Length: 199
Length: 220
Image (cartoon, rainbow over all chains, first blue to last red; front, side):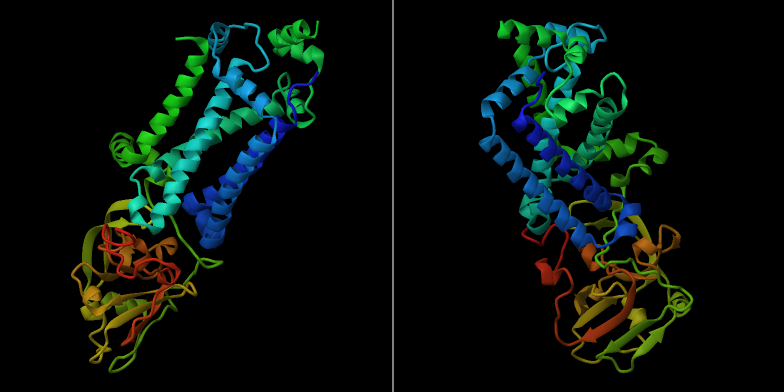
């Protein structure tokens, strides 16, 4: 059964591709041992900054040109942390909708991190040349976000690629659809919602 | 609070905390630095130095064959070995290092040579207004005026925090200029070009101020 449409998948992979380029170049800029090996700071920094700009433009374009109603529905669903979600987060196996509570938290964190990365990065970039834009904590915020995103993405990758019972979800993000029996096990409320709608 | 407001509050709360961090972040970092034990802070690269190398490879100078050449507008050009430099009167100081990109390292212990001693043998001629430090990291260089070079806390350092300067910090010698941003602290110095005319350094050619006073340059 279909889970993610073209717009959702494009947005996901645009973000993912940019994230890994930014992470790799960002770590070279940040970690002394890597800076020593790679050197070429100007090149690495230019790749980092241009990728960030390309990311921002691409995300805006995907949202403007894509299925905005679908994205708005997704966001409404993600923001809604219901009673069942709160119980699920406390470890109870409560039937979940199209997004389970963990996926909602992951999406909320990813969105907040992305905006804060962009904002702190913008001030780092501008503040370096013009100190009127230099904010005391921009570097700290950018660094803390780096560590936090590494943890978040590691968990996300584990569940999407490694963990045997959840990794089927990856197909939803590549091809767009998932097996019905898998959906019935992991997202039963979603399956019954879809069936109720279809009848 | 309805169900939707919970997710939105969490999202906006996180954004708010992040924005507050932009303004008060340095205080938080300082606080953490006092709470977190030393062993842990060394695992977090953001707590200390960052290494900026613009060439395709970081210079690796052999201290045994290293030579520092002082030439240009001087009575006689001089070439020093590292041992020669160490035999000149030794100066020590503790000063803060500020990078133009916004990070700082406090209380760095430097040892090296003051310029009055370093230049005593070469004897700059009248009109020697500028001292250009040429790095083995081609094409990096930077420049200080004669007033700046003879400030009491400026030196050519060969030790940092009690140890010979590490490769990443400019071994065997680098400029130390605490009142200015780090791009004036030329690393891997192998030539001092004494000049009458100003010539913009590597970063100055890319839009940064030559008088890079901490807190009083680059737009402030």
